[in-house]
Length: 125
Length: 270
Image (cartoon, rainbow over all chains, first blue to last red; front, side, top):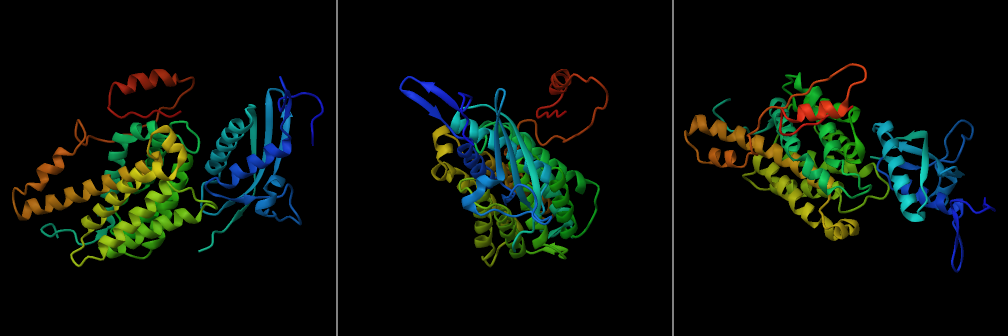
């Protein structure tokens, strides 16, 4: 996962290098995503037997893929949303929140946030 | 009917109340925009809430349903389909909870109205894993609690319950900076919560007007009507008109400037 060449996530400073690993960014993005309104949780990438798997809180970063691209970061995010909501709008809010939180935390531009809604979960009553 | 105070919330009264909310939010949404710093400080909370409420009202405008349940269901559907932004999605859940609570009812007693307010807040809470306090969610809950407390009074009326909800919302909004660091740092109250307060105040204004209008026919020259008139925004209630411009290569900025000169709360989306 670690990038070897100096990139957007690694910067030479006067007293040494600072490098943020994509896995750290993934954790930040995952936590931002799960606190979003209407998001039930993160999902594992890909379906298991055709069913989306809801990830536990400790492993939210498994539902996030961070890639360094030209100009910054590209983030793919896999979520399960709650039933009864306008999914397109929840996804749009999710994009904005993840971009804002990641940029604030690591100070690297986020070029794109791709949201994959893997499933819809009925709320508990 | 026209000579008695409204004792319950039926379809037409609820419809009127929502139209009042829309008018009041339309007059105040810029103020809500200015407060917006959380979760993303992009200054669009007021606009998003207004567009969502507009979509909710759009569906009920054409309905003459006598039952409050039908109007609530239309508002729930309209706000779901037209939800914009975080606050809009939350607002749609508030309407959804309200609609569920009043299902099958043709008119609501003050007590039932308070229960519906509480259920609306509960529904909004259920859709998030880690609710952030000091937001519209907190304000919705406090409004519901305060409505429920008021409904416990023996002489509770529809107006007194809505007044309590609005007062509860106002108090909760003022407390939001003490609950959310980011608001405290920015020196503002929560935008979405303030928007909800305005929606409830708009309802209250309408209900008070409806009551004083009824009182005016029964007991002429009731001073309360004058006081309600003083609270109106500059230029009075006015009208809320919407229209759609279709075509190719429309200059959004030009349309906006031209239309802005026509009204005092103009919204152009494209």
